[in-house]
Image (cartoon, rainbow, N blue to C red; front, side, top):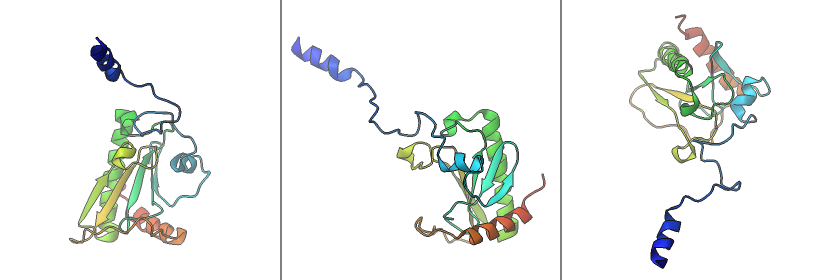
Length: 168
């Protein structure tokens, strides 16, 4: 009987403690995250495009010149699982337009859309966001994350992409 009782105890889920770090797929939304602060105009951003649903901006560190982030404007969502179908659609339409702008402004011959959910998948900011990374030619090397751009560099690239942004 001892073995069966021990087996039963092992099979029961352990309670989540307050000390356990959030893994990104569940938990409370942090209203102090960088994207929330940008959306409330509490932090600067080099904006490429904005409508009532999404904001497209330059990340502080571009993996490639012209790399942008597409973020939904609703506060409270932590990852892709929290988005409504309409919000997800708005993000994908903006990502498609970003790819088109990268083709025109930068001569992109390809682009990559990356989106991470949960810290185990590499998500660092717990507000949904989509990376649209342009590629010109076959060079697949990405810039190291430690190499940040200046605000002037980000603003200049944002202006190039804004000028090439599709109207429809």
